[in-house]
Amino acid sequence: MHHDISLITTISVALGLALVLGFVAARLRLPALLGYMIAGVVIGPGTPGFVADMALAQQLAEIGVILLMFGVGLHFSLSDLMAVRRIAIVGALAQIAVATLLGFSVARWWGWDIGASLVFGLALSVASTVVLLRGLEARGLLDSANGRIAVGWLVVEDLVMVFVLVILPALAGWLGGRPVDAGGDAEAGGLALAVAITLGKVAVFVALMLAGGRRLFPWLLWQVARTGSRELFTLAVVATAMGIAYIASIIFGVSFALGAFFAGMVLRESALSHRAAEESLPLRDAFAVLFFVSVGMLFDPGMLVESPAKVLAVVAIIVFGKTIAAFALVLLFRYPLNTALTVSASLAQIGEFSFILAALGISLGLLSAEGQNLILAGALISIALNPLLFNALEPLQRWIRGRSSLARFMERSSDPLAELPMSTDLRRLTGHAVVVGYGEVGSRVAGALTQSGISVVVAEQNRELVEQLRARGLAAVSGDAAEPEVLIQAHVARARLLIVTIADTLRTRRMMETARLLKPDIQILARASGDEDARMLTRDGAAQVFVREQELARGISNSAIELLAARDATQDQH
Image (tube, one colour):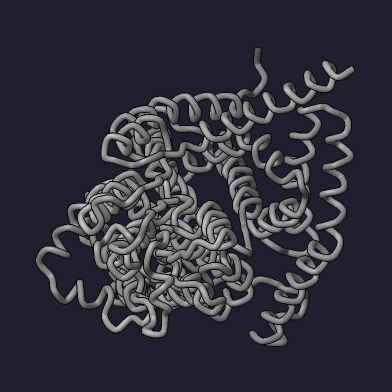
């Protein structure tokens, strides 16, 4: 066989080595994508031995970017963002500004020009979607109030970076890079015209996608789904993502990433969006691995020896600068210490958008190879450190609360939502039920109790949600119910029932301990994420523990028995 097999070689070696090193990383309780990036370093030109085809790897990486951004758009929920919009929008914008300023200032101090410094600062300001989601999911925090805030914050960061990817080519010439023709006469018309033409093209693309695409593509999915062919459905999803991204780039001059993001957004409108996400997941994961491997191939490990001070400065900005900024911002919004620590730890890394932005900066002549190398080094190290930060949250929280009166004061100082209003009817605060969490489960439980004439006090970490509940006349307090003062403000000492609707065993056990201390005979109903957690909570004294899978099975079984009994009774009558 004499034909060229460089594509097969590149994919085989990349996936094989990524599997081995990803497995090693997972066994060490590190993110698997760290192993993928190290696999790229091993087969890249910066290390001896086999060197994969860089050109092919970059094209495979482009496919990975398209499918990654398609997945982000497919899971983008405007309603979830709006639920935490106040802290997510303002917090994310402020944190991006702080991190960008830190990166910009350090780069200028190194002697870089304005354009390179700006791209460098922006690349350090945005966290990895993959790392954040998987980190929260591994700890059971994805559906929690803290998880929703972190994800909403990240969505805002992603949207800002999407805008940067759109506008940066138009600004390239002005920032000292290679000017990009935005429409034939953009240079002659000046910066304002270049920006206007670029935004105009994007606006036309977005309008077409929202006006026609959100109807056309979901309809096409339905037609394919009706054939009953699973492979055709998967092909339709992937072809839509790739096709829209390609058309967006060729016709409208929009990046592959933005085109794929909107492809995911319009397909989310379909009732088949969950199936589309599930069916395309294996392919998205496979090409995401190739994306991270190709990113690792760009990294020159010699940077760690040649410029250790610069690498440390980059890591400090990502791990400490961003973390402290996010921590302070969350506390300023009067959220609990637990929320501030969780959100700040989630964002203390950089990832895919940073790589995409760095690659764009290189192509526009704004960023040097050194700048890209420093960004890659910062990503590798911050991703490796991220699990350690998460593991340090609990001991750090105990240490802060045990030694810092200032931290305790900052956490709940003069917060009107941290305690019930004086005007609250005391009759509603005796013999009532305290419901912890007002998500999908908690809201239904509280609604059912209220309709049955049982008084309810809600303890919820989302301050915006607490404001909405109070506006509707419901008794609610803001804060982390794992802290005794929150349950005290919910008058748990007078309650008949404590209902914990969040699946966080550690915090639930703290709530139970506080409730038993204040009201020894209180009845406790709790939610658990699995059988082992359920047994633990039962041993701790919960009257009843609910596990989602068990309750679903029980509900289906009861319905089946009732239906069969009714059918047998009907047959007996005849």
